[in-house]
Amino acid sequence: MKILVVEDDRKVAGFIEQGLREEGYSVDVAPDGDEATMLAHVYDYDVIVLDVMLPKKSGLHVAAELRREGRGTPVLMLTARDATEDIVRGLDAGADDYLTKPFKFDELLARVRALVRRGGATRTELLTYGPIELDRLKHKVRVGGRGLELSPKEFHLLEHFLLRPEEVVRRTELLEKVWDMHFDPESNVVDVHVGNLRRKLRQAAQMSLIHTVRGVGFRLQKP
Image 1 (cartoon, rainbow, N blue to C red):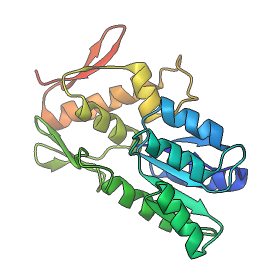
Image 2 (tube, rainbow, N blue to C red; image 1 turned 180 degrees about the vertical axis):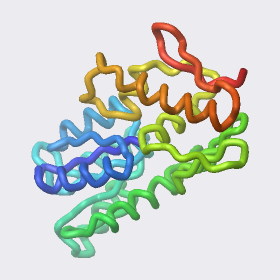
Image 3 (spheres, helix red, strand yellow; image 1 turned 90 degrees about the horizontal axis):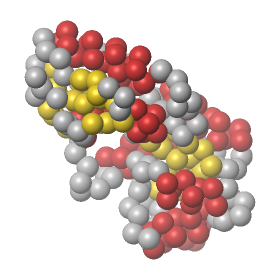
């Protein structure tokens, strides 16, 4: 899952980014409202963590603009204020939930998970293909009815493949969705992680399920 954190306080932004990455999320950080709007137009985020008080454009304006454009990405609004009128303004602008500062990371993480869980009627929590079952909320994978241990990156790679079964998935797409916008596209990190995932799936399913499309990317497909 890919999350956009919009926060101008570098210390707070770094704290949130590090915590989310340790939970296996791919994270982009924007320091102001203008960059947040630009990134939200370019990338398809699962959740936006959005501070209210921002340079250039407030979080209220960012949320309202995204909603006017019909973008339904769940928004968790961060604010140093807890007055009722401020909360109402945020929710009216299009936020789905709010969290007042200071906060504990566990609470932020719980609210992010709740927003992902409510993140739209088209979202499927259990992804299946052939012998593979992936639970997006519990972060568990079963192959042929047996549990399979995956690293966070392997889990999100498999999740992305299961969203696009039997389609060619380009390496650049995996870099964007599973890693982040700043990752070096010349790195072989995608091939290494896909190779590890492919080996684990082959051992568990007794068949090859991830296939390399030379010069392009990979495809999840049964033999």
